[in-house]
Amino acid sequence: MNRRELLQSLSCGFGYTALAGLTTEASVAATAFRSPLAPRAPHFPARARRVIFLFMQGGPSQHETFDHNPELAAASSSGNVIASPYQFAPQGESGLPISELFPNLARHADSLCLLNGMHTDSPAHPQATIQMHTGSFNFVRPSMGAWVVYGLGTENRDLPGFITVNPAQLGGAQNFGSAFLPASYQGTPYQTRTGKLPNIAPNIAAEAQRKQVDLIQSFNKDYLRKATMDAELEGVIESYEMAFRMQSAVPGILDFKGESEATRKMYGLDKPPTRDFGTQCLLARRLAEAGVRFIEISHAGWDHHNNLRARMAQNCREIDQPIAGLISDLKQRGMFEETLVVWGGEFGRTTTGQNGDGRNHNNRGFTMWMAGGGVRGGFRHGACDAVSGSAVAGKVHLHDLHATLLNQLGLDHTRLTYRYGGRDFRLTDVHGRIVKEILA
Image (tube, rainbow, N blue to C red; front, side):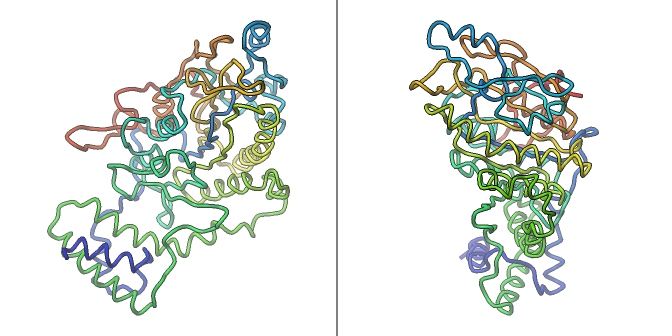
């Protein structure tokens, strides 16, 4: 058995628990390298310090939510084009048109930047979901959260830089993986229903654990003395250190007991329809406040091929108050302007009907929105054709979205690269432009 195999064998019994009771020599070995999660300066002054990504799995219909297109009603008089059954009304001082399904979020209309000309490359859920998260569906690539942490590190050494809450099922671990980036940058999944993070609880007695750690760290010290760089081994060391610190930090973050009753109600934790997503939104604020760099929360069930009217109303009811509560909470805590909030799914829906009361997939034109983090509030960018549903003005590809997101964090998407397999890779591949029209 070689050194790496022995390390892996020991770590299985170790449970990724930690450095409790290390000898001085082993502790020195553990800090012999610069932590890959240490904070790093951006390329230029940033408008945002963190991202909260609200991912709506399934492809929410823009026609019922944030894309008011009066011509859709006129086009529905012929052919299979169907108008939205819901009314839009101008909201806020900006007059931003928002569906009646979002009465709470409408109060923040002057803070929202609607991207009505989004488009992507695949109309299939798994591929489009992976591309949304990684920039590619043809190859395994690092997720955007991993790229962000690679570029900036984290602001809290006791917590991962990237946490994904109730991650989307389609696409699996690729949605929060680090691919060829060092493993330290991958997302840490957390399930609110179980209330547990994986692999941080001790599973052996303290004395035996100490002996294992000391042995592992002695190997680490010996290996690191000889190697100029070993990202995999550094990731293992960092996981041990991080797991130990997380045992103390995580319980406090996940415990809502310190939140006031007014705050809990603001997020909708007092009502069954909004409790689940409200819990995610409140947790996102707590993680952001604690210094986590990239936070993703998810809401499934937006694939409305039928029963559009009833299911859309239900889905919007579940997220409307929690998202409005999140924005209000960020504002009152002085965090909104330095937090980039992004909402959207992997694609949108067609202008034409399906199964009597539904819409099919549409990757050629859909809507996302951004708020805070230096983007223009009360602003609408782009438009889709009322008949074809394709983006025809202010077109924003996913590569452009990723480039703009990185820009707000102070990162140049053309300079944020990682050399692998003989070439420099980046989140936007060889594409992407910053959507300067939406910047404040």
